[in-house]
View 1: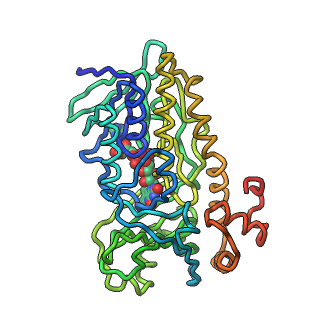
View 2: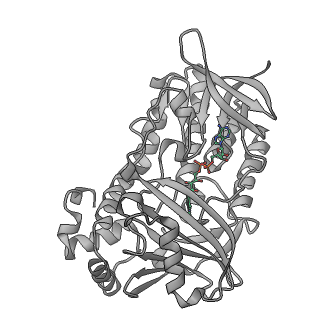
View 3: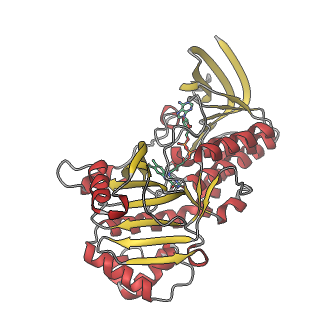
Length: 397
Ligand SMILES: Cc1cc2nc3c(=O)[nH]c(=O)nc-3n(C[C@H](O)[C@H](O)[C@H](O)COP(=O)(O)OP(=O)(O)OC[C@H]3O[C@@H](n4cnc5c(N)ncnc54)[C@H](O)[C@@H]3O)c2cc1C
C-alpha cells in the first residue's frame, strides 16, 4: 500500500480545510490536503452570501474573481409583507458579498498550495490510523480507487457537515434533531428581484428557518429555504415550503430553475470539545456555524486559521496532545462562543413565534433607532420592547 508521511493531513478542501492547510504550510509544516471530490467548491451547496468584515480578520483580500455581487444591504420581510430594508452602513456585519463559491473555494485552495501544501484530489478519507498507543496517527484513504495511508502527526478534520473523521477519532459529533435545518435552493433565472439586496423572509413560510433570495445579477438569484423538520406540517418538507413561497410571489411568475441543490446545516453552538490527541475539527465538522443564519463560511475560515496557527506552535515542541491542542479550543471559543450560544437561543425563540409577533417585531425594528443592525443589536432592542422574547438568555445580550 502506498504510504505518505507528513506533519499534518487536512481532510476536506472547503474553506475550513484550505485555510488550515495554508496556515500550517505557512508555519513550515509539511502539509497534505485531501479532497474526495473531483472539483473543489463544486457541486454548490451554499446560498453564497457572506459579510465583509471578517475577510480582513483571516487575511483574505476581496477578489473580483470570486465576488459575484457587492450588496447594498439586506431586506428582512415578514410573511405579512412588512419589510425592513437596511443599507450596508447598518447591515455591515451581516451582509456584504454574494460569492461565486466554486471560485472562492478554489482560490483558498490555491493560497494553500502557494503556501506549500500538497493537494490530493479524488482522495477520500475512509478511517483514521491509530498508533501503538491507540492515538490518531493519520488517515486511511482511497485515492483514485487505490487504498493509501497518510501518516501524520496531526489530523485536521475539515470534512464539513457530514464529517466522519471526528467520529472515527472518537469525538461525539452527533446533533440533536432540533439543531438541524434542512435546506433546498434553486438557482432561478427570469425573475424580478432586487439586484443588490439580500432578502430574508421569516415566519410560517419557513418553519424554524427562513427563505433567502440572494441575487446573482441579470435576473438570476439563489432562492432557497431552510426549515426545522419538527416544525413542518404533516409530510411537508423544505421543497414543499419553497415551492409554495415561489408560487405565491409574483416576482417568480416567469421564473425558471437552472440548478437545484439540497443540504443540511447544523444550528447548535459548536461541539463540546473539538480536539483530541492529534486531532482537530474545524468549520462545519466542529458544528461551528451561526445557528440563526446558517452562515458558516467565515466560521470555517476562522477556525481553519486558528487550527493552522496552533498546530504551527505545537510543531515547535512536537506535542500535538489534546492538552496542547486546547489552545485551539480557547481561541475559537474566545472569539465566537458567546455569539454562537446567544444566536442558538435566539433561534429557538424565533422558531416559537407566530407570524403576528414576527410582524410586530419587524415594525418595531423598522421604527427603532438601531445603529448597526446585527443579531446582537436587534436582540438588545427587542429585549427592551419584548422582554419575554429574550427570557433565559438576557445576560448574553
Ligand atoms: C443550503 C446551504 C446554504 C448555505 N448558505 C450559506 C451562506 O449563504 N453563507 C455562509 O456563510 N454559509 C452558508 N452555508 C454554510 C456553509 O456552506 C458551510 O458552513 C461552509 O461550507 C463550511 O465550510 P467547511 O470547510 O467547514 O466545510 P465544506 O465547505 O462542507 O467542505 C468540506 C469538504 O470536505 C470534503 N470531504 C468530506 N468528506 C471527505 C472525506 N472523507 N475525504 C476527503 N474529503 C472529504 C467535501 O467534499 C468538501 O469539499 C450554507 C449551507 C447550506 C447547506
